[in-house]
Length: 531
Image (tube, rainbow, N blue to C red):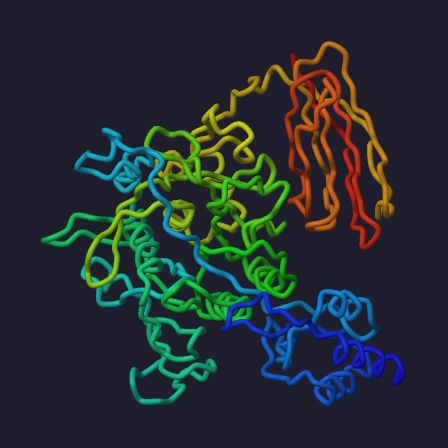
């Protein structure tokens, strides 16, 4: 074992990169999870001796070790370390950021000039409020740039830690945080989580703002407590380790919904572990799909793309109920859409501001989920999600943009309506057929294996995946239509049981893998066809 550890350490000290790709805040910091075995502690000590310095332990069970290094490790070194005995994984503490403010996709829209903001008209928010009888108060965590706790439209909705005495410098409730009255600032490691950017305050207002004598702005939820968890600096820059801490703080302190209006292209295992812990506790995580016009089926955005049952990925629509031009999309990876174009909400210094982005769509979905949950807090997270998905308005123009063509509707969700998807064919037009199509598990390196599904006379074929997982960032499952055109390139893990509709009577699935790591591949035990 000693020789293995020595080799591992030699890789570290000899394979530093000469150039840095991280921001100043995330430079040369790494997240390591060790395997459980008798020599694990020895491995940790040897890593410290050879250039990596232990900073702290984080994670659901403190199993993630945060190390700093004097220089950035090269990609070759990281790849080598990830194959060594004693280490489950090592990964950079990548930078995460809030998306930049996006210009409106509509230069002028009558809906934007209405006295009631258009997003509330589309969501039928006030109608939902009237239908909601005696809602119970629930806690929603806003994991962002903080919240301006004194904002006149928000101050009475702030979550308060009743076990903490403000300003006494003591961890009264012994939860590991001193004076965490309304939340915590994980970026600066301090109790005050006041917003110095505006992004978090804007998101918070969309969830739970209330009208005052001087401002009639309001959020989706009439009864909510907003937990302020700051993970970014004033420029909207942060790191994965702070997000991990915030997620775990939220679930341990009573939040049942987590709003995550931020993202990274890196499928970080340590962050997934935190959201997995939230899933086990029945907490819903709502995350922005991103503002890069990307197809998240091909190039993921995280945490939105994590293949967890509690994760809801949100895209943006505009005032005309069409997909926003800036929004990321994904026929398999994006769950729902919501208005995100020129959305009015609370901002810094007690003011209001209109912003655009999936960052705005995300809290609207979080708010609708909260509305449904506040109706009956005994519901499971799966039941709440299902009601919101069922109640979403199904829009033909969202075909290929999200999983079930749904744009969230608060009233339908509260009333537990089930709005059927009629595009491209109504439900009665589809027929199911058992089949056994699956790749090797795992699939092979350098593979171009192909698999054909065909049904004569079909106008559409629906691929019903039992499971689908390709190596993130490197390997793809190409979906080729009856004309021989590649219509989808699927990359990364997807939620089990997802379906993908392809026009035509024949579909070819072809694996395109590189020479390194592989994953499960795919399995299809039945497909649907319609004409």
